[in-house]
Image (cartoon, rainbow, N blue to C red; front, side, top):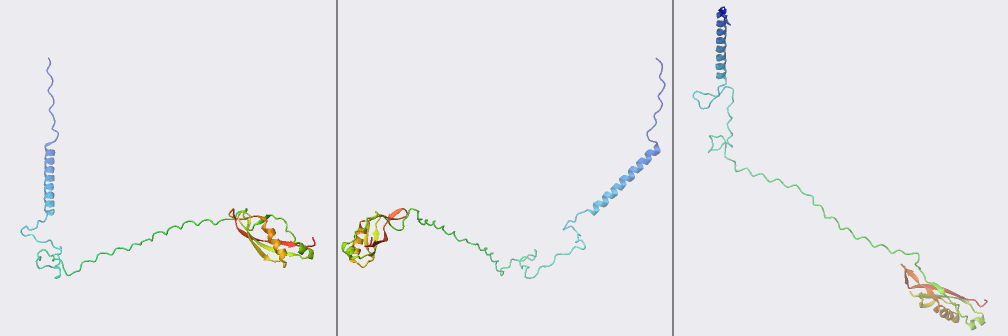
Length: 211
């Protein structure tokens, strides 16, 4: 086996001069860091009350003394006086007035409808059966005539309930004949709201001897 040639020697990464410069720079940086750290530590030191030789920082005002009426005799160290007893308590706030609405008025009941008259209602009775009067013989012989007006009260059934003279003719026989004639008449009764009722009507009867 043939012998291998010897390996060339390795060169160092840094020269001795470069290594010295690097170490010097590291030492200077470390020294600057320590100086800065010590300077900041002194500036940020907290003030501890009660420490020997500590004084109030300049420029900070001291608390102002309390007035005599607020300073209490038994609590002078704290600066707070005892509560005053001569001050009247504050009056409670008055309640706001409330509007009381009156109860609603009761609704009146609906009015009853007024009765309406139908077309079939009759205000006056109407004669439907009217036999003619009998002319008195003596009055006819003497030529006496006249008009008799008879007031008739017709009942709900159409019959005559009562009658009398509304206007006489001047002859008693003619008046009597008119009353006897109308007493036998029949009427259609007057109606109200569709119901027959009693009502009055005046019936004229004329006696003329020339007929």
